[in-house]
Length: 147
Image 1 (cartoon, helix red, strand yellow):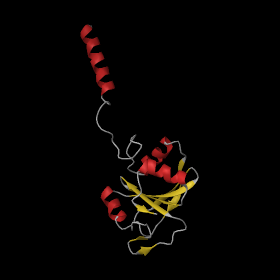
Image 2: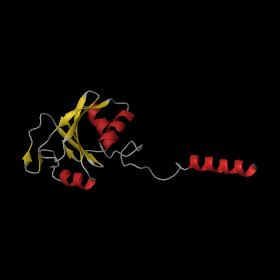
Image 3: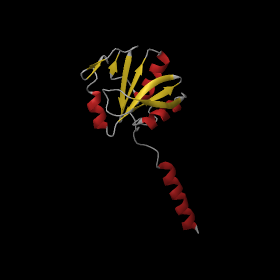
Image 4: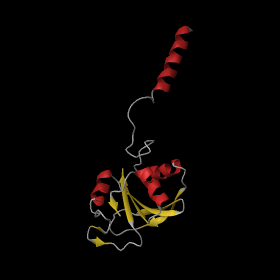
């Protein structure tokens, strides 16, 4: 009987200590989890006490995947999810540092563009709302291109 109780205690301790230690799984400023795709991006926004929902599909000629228009606290951002991180990086490399062109396409944005990338996604926010910029940066990290 004592052996059975001891085994149970060891198993419980092992399970409870299993999540301790190690390094964070993310490079985002929140350090709570890694944003790698559209689903984890939405979870990241919600974990930051924001509302986030997929509204509709969006297309940009300069990115190969169909994107999603995601409404975050009433503000629209565009999310493009790739099959692999390498495919995402290949297309992200085509974006100029100021976001004024992507590959051979010259842009005439209605407001300042902001491009973010992580995992398998590229996010575009067109605008200058400080709360939105801070929220996207909190969840995704710093922009890689834009104004």
